[in-house]
Amino acid sequence: MTGKETKEVVVPKEDAVFRLDAHGRWHNKHGVFEHKKIIDYFHSSIRRDADGYYLFQKHGDHAVEKVYFKYEDTALFVFDLINPDDFDKTRLILNTKKEIPLDPKTLFIQGDNLYLEHDGHRIKFIDRALLKLAHRLKFDQQQYRLEFSGETYGIPIRHKNNRTGK
Figure 1: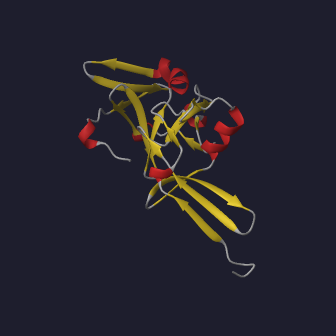
Figure 2: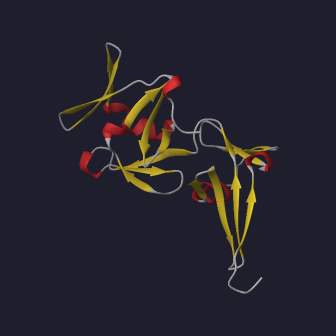
């Protein structure tokens, strides 16, 4: 191997020693991860390719590692919101630390959860983020709505057989 070649180490999800639960928490055989720096590192390392979601890690200039992992619902979550009361400035903070704008047309309800689709990803709102939008969410006659600045956006309900993702 020459100095310019990079070795790629791939770990299939069946061999991963960790998983992501339906609430965005990492687990291993000892239970839920508790160390914030490790949790943040894992979330910020999430990537996706044609084979699924994986954690990416670069080992200097000589190797990269892709560890595919199991997840219960989705690998991406809305962890926080910036400017939740100013529609034009509302930004969603994902578990990966990426910021995206809130687009009400991408929202949907499935089960008892709020999701959105962005760039082909299915992203779930965790409770903490959902609370910041709660005062804008309305429900009547089997219809969910998001209300901002006098505008109302319907939020469709998707049933399990219409699910995308995994």
